[in-house]
Image 1 (tube, one colour):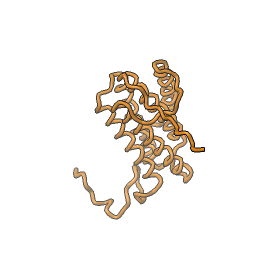
Image 2 (tube, one colour):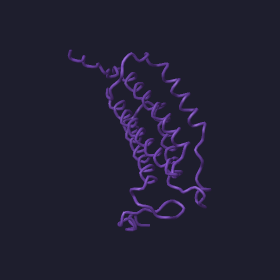
Image 3 (cartoon, rainbow, N blue to C red):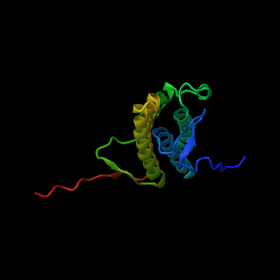
Image 4 (cartoon, rainbow, N blue to C red):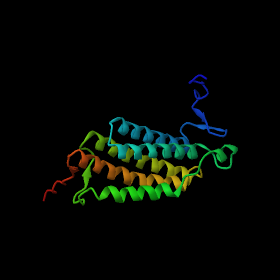
Length: 186
């Protein structure tokens, strides 16, 4: 099978289960953002994080692939019966992970700028890509092409990625980069 099909040369793409839409459709934007988020987590994993973080990130990547598949498959199509559903327990598991990882961290006293260690900076990038993906999925949902479960999942994932960025800095012995607001001129 060739990687190129030329079927998208006119600016359309095929959905899983059939049908073609513009590559700029809300649905394609939504699952494209989820794909970018997944690639960002792959970048973090390439930085060889501690094994517990790597295992969690791999699980999240697997889940994100399912999120993308749900978004790429129109509901009610024959293909939709072959896509695993998003599970509420994934959100519960992320909440549990947030609570566990926060026990390693000092309470926040300032807003935190993205940065610190390479892994933390990449996790912060993942968090911002996650928020963008969430916005695109919300827009698709409002147009009848999204998934409420995906919105919840991405919302919680962005929180988890923030905490993981802080954990990455903490474990590397690097302080979070605090935002110190400039005093307004009087």
